[in-house]
Image 1 (tube, rainbow, N blue to C red):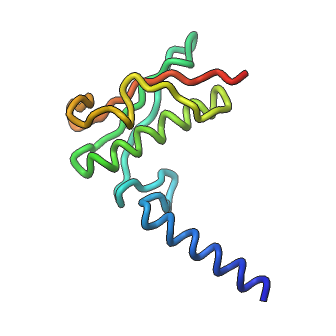
Image 2: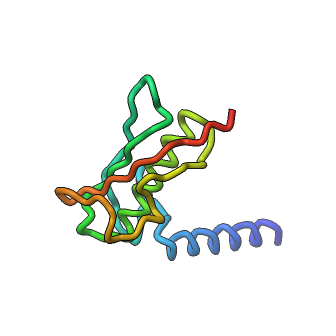
Length: 115
């Protein structure tokens, strides 16, 4: 009976993630049911300040926003061990003020140094 409960809970968790658009079958998770290409870049001398980009935004603006936030979080966890970010342009930015050029969404942020 214990194994059944564990499998049931895992199935429910996966179903919930799928509905939220976060279930992934590959390296990159899906956002709003779509896959986006992207990454985060920073100068080697100052990895705390970064720029995250994803494309193609034309698939889903909502999904692109989630994917760009994900790229920033991955960057900050990798270099600073935290997902805390002070966004200059980020997921809380008014959609009309977002930087979208050539079907690419750009976020800018600063990782909080918890150390």
